[in-house]
Image 1: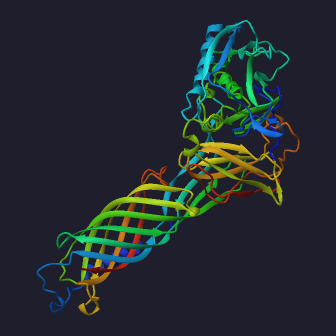
Image 2: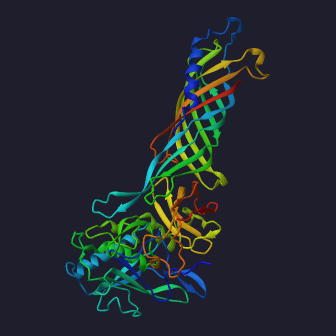
Image 3: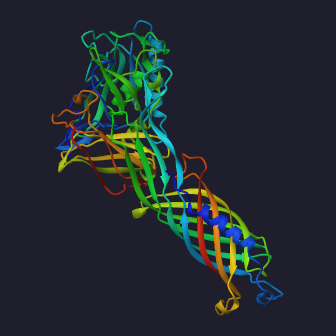
Length: 233
Length: 332
């Protein structure tokens, strides 16, 4: 059973807040001739469950049609997991930022084994993996820096690597994402020395995976929601 | 210590028509060489095979040779295995003539073997464990077909099974059977090396399954095979006791391939090698679909336990094995 991912709750709330809040007071706006180019960030969140497909263990039946005989059935998924992420971005224009992100989590890989032809008791086989998601993408700001809340849309692609404990096996999938979120600019008094800007960032993304653990699922999808701190230089 | 598997000096393995032995996943035939259990293999390749002059109702000698050649080609075509075969010609010798230096395939009448479609015999070098001769007879007490017609057993399918024995593979237990009058009937199988044949007119046995491919590849590995594949290893336990003869199946979540093996000692230890890297689930079952003597030449096979899944997902790395694990089963 899939739980409602936290992201589904956070995303509308964050976006609504971004749209309804008034712009930051004029006195707080920084009149600059150029904008900070480099952004770094880090934070954490939750990656939702993902179904990796169902497959039957089939034998060949003793008939001319060759229809399969199911020895048992499997259904595979990754459980939701807490994740941490680090991010490095380059702001190419006032609206467009290209960025790379590394997300690390420890999801549980679970396989439901059922419908055994010889009445084996159903079992949920599990192993904990370390998941590394490395993606490159872009964000498009939907408002200018004069606002304190700045909504954005994002998208990108990369790969998801799942490593078994003991590093005995790593399975690699192609991944892609689309999402949205909002930036919240902190007041200038809270900007660390050396940085030109800082704030909070809230992301909600829909990720898709293909291959690797998701080989049997075609395109496997899940939602991730993260909150992070960013610094702009 | 690994116990012996149906092999010693001269042995014969048979494919049964309806009643008889159950199987497990791929199993390599072994012989004791200077006290050490050694898988039997051909020492040189290509293996030369002869066809006898005998024919059977509905199958000419030429059709027999064509079907046998296709079956040999099936094994030779496995890309991860390095064994080849050569048709050496037609001979007046018969499969029952042992120690003549010829590996002869042919029809023979064995009306007394009313449940044996075909059988493979070996002459082994007991010093090295090498196969020096292997003969296969196809029993004319049964109807045969070279075309897959519904009035006979498919010659090519049965030949593919027997050639599996000829290269040193034992029976596989990847199949399900049911009792019927006179013996067991196969319901389904996932290995050419399952010991009970499909019914008349069914040609599914012409195609090797992942279990068969793993077996021949482990016995005759092509270059790079060992580095490209891995294994699972563990024990089957009932309480504190290991279960000799327990059948263990590895199921690849990514491909759906089934490959099996047996616990081969009193500790219940097993190894299933030749697996493509990936994530696997493990299922242990008793050898209760057929006669245990189709697999093992020793008594003491424990079948009094329930079919059980391992409660974890097992990773198979390339070129090695993951950590060993125990499959803990419960009594029936």
